[in-house]
Image (cartoon, rainbow over the protein chains, first blue to last red):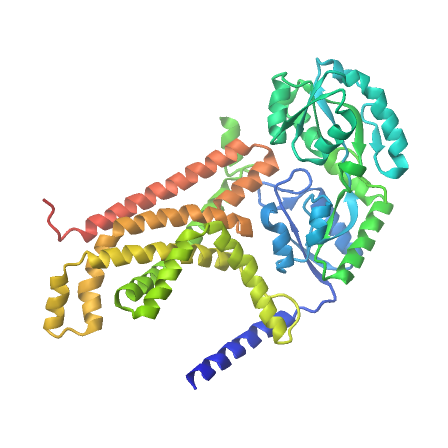
Length: 285
Length: 237
């Protein structure tokens, strides 16, 4: 008898909680988007605690296109995927690259940003004069032949040079694949570590994502460093940064997808990325 | 140095206010966790002293498991697992959507049940330090159990427990940093946000370290004071 009372009480309580939950209808007029808030310039926080950055602006634009009211919340990057799947929020916009591994856990829209990778060197190094500085080559099938031509062009210039790269990254795979026979590839645990060795002259150059390196060479303490040579993207260097969503929300995925495509097509992504990065990160769809 | 003062100050470019708010959050979540831990700890101590075999076993399992698995795992299980379990339950009853566990509550409960496992052992040790004769004397004059608990056990056990509780409080303070993974903006999370947003990690992490040190120093002094007050009737040779 007593046990039955307890069961009844638990059932009633759960029902109460459940009713509270069922109140949120799934017409997606209200969307909660999570970002990290600490990844400049993608998304970060100003001194008043307000979230700002490229993805915050883009999220506002996407929500306008989806005619939805959006709330942007900050969430540590560590727990962002499990938190999405546990329903803490509905979407992730946190500088997150599409990878095969992440695709096992969540769904992605079309990418809204793709930042190529390039070299950073000391201004005094011979590599500072690599050709095609700033030119972007795609390793996707459509641009592959041009990219490989460029790689073969700079190969002789890199002969015998020491290049630092972060270990187990797309950039490290790229160097292994294309430059293994001529370059002494030195792998580092973090990008900060190869920057320190670059400053100390232990490596001739480093190879990393431009969204990271640009910030590095602009630091006053790194005034002897500069970006050099062509930029490579696509293919083994990543599919791009996209909105992450639960696999169980296909309607929301379709809405976000349409909004991202429209923002890419009408130049909004170009405008916003030029504002925050100083260059265009628009991916080719 | 003046750069640092501006960065951590209260001006338009200063992060001072945010760091102060984060410190208050750390204090609030640690205090809530510690209080919950005290209740759980007292129950555990009671179970292990007075309980029958089943209750004792349950208390044993609780302290062994919670002291034995990493704290971060407890937080993950409660925050993510708790939400998923509640959601599954709601779906079972025909509802749609998600049921969330609030991040403050999840954090405080996680650190609280860890703290409770440690506090249980402290209370048990403190109870055992009470002279048996005093309990027997109280019983022999027919003192009711509740009165015996209030007059004989609590004042003496707490006195023995204070140094140990001081330790557990420091643990709770530091464990509160782990809650940064669930998105609660306490000192560590705020420092990470500031470091990533300004590319000045050292300034923020050193400030965070100083804030934790201040909290632990002041609370250490408070516990010393409490111990002094509790021991005022006891002569020390």
